[in-house]
Every structure is written in C-alpha cells, then in structure tokens.
Image (cartoon, rainbow, N blue to C red; front, side, top):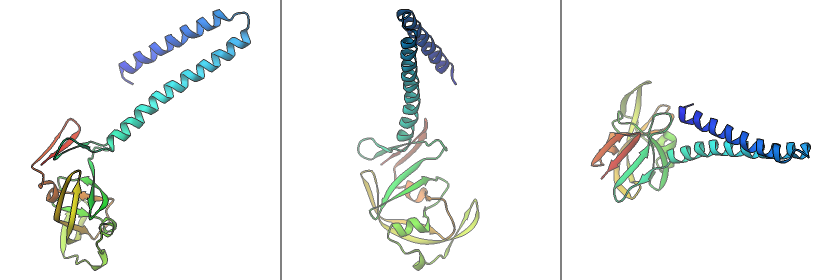
Length: 193
C-alpha cells in the first residue's frame, strides 16, 4: 500500500466515523433504528470501497488488453502485467494472438494457430531448424496470404510453423521489421509505418 492509499484510507475512516457519530447523536431516542441505519450505511460504504477497488482492477485489465491505433500507421500496445507485449493479428482473416518477441527471427506459429489461419500442419515440410530456449525444434517455412494489424494489411508474409510444443505464437522480427520504427518506452510498444 502506498502512502497515498494509506492517506485515502485514513480520510475515509474519519469521514465514516463523523457520519456515524452524527447518525448516533441524531437518533438517540431509537437506538435499534440508529444501529440499523448504521449497518446500512456501513454496507454501502464497504460496497463503494469494494467497487472502487474492483473498478481499478477491471479498468487496468481492459486497458492492458487493448491495442490503440493512433492515426494512420501507428499502433500503441501497453505492456501486460507479465512483462510481455501481445498483439492480435488477422492472418487470412482469422484473429491470432501473438506475443511480441524481438529475439525471434520470424513470425512463428503454433500448429494450432497455423491450422486456424488456413494452413494444414500435417502437409507441411518441417525442413528448418530453430534454436529455442527449450532446445532445437523443427520448423516449416510458410507464406501467409494476408496479415492485418489495425489498418495495415501486408500480403505474402513469410512465417514458419513450429513442429514442437509452444504456449503461443511469436511475432518476431521478420514481421516487425516491416514497420519503419519500433520503440519501447514507458511501458508501451509503439509501431509506426
């Protein structure tokens, strides 16, 4: 908890005590009715505090999942709580979620994502090799007819399908270098073309 949060909490407690004290003093004749009103206001107070806390969490989560398009040819992506940047691209019209990986050479698809994009992983030739953190894996070079991010569409994009197990597809430099400028600062990834 930060010092600002502690100060806000102290302020709210004092405010609650002042309202509660006023209610108690104004209704001394009927203690049971005063206690009922105090309980109602207490629950309202707790509900507002809980809603405020949850609203911040919901707002943070929805903002983190959103890609912002700033004018023509500029995309801003906020960093996720896990430290990664995620983008959803339309491959042959099918939305595929990628983790941005500047250490990856190519756009690398999982077998499942390749199938969703209209490729048949069982008919691919896994003739390539890639060194990963999990060791060497076989890859199959492919071409994606259309790749759309925001209002930018690229055609005949080079990619590869990973023959091994992956937790998700990777958006490597093979695609990212199509953007004129890549900048990471202040918890945001900016792509400009």
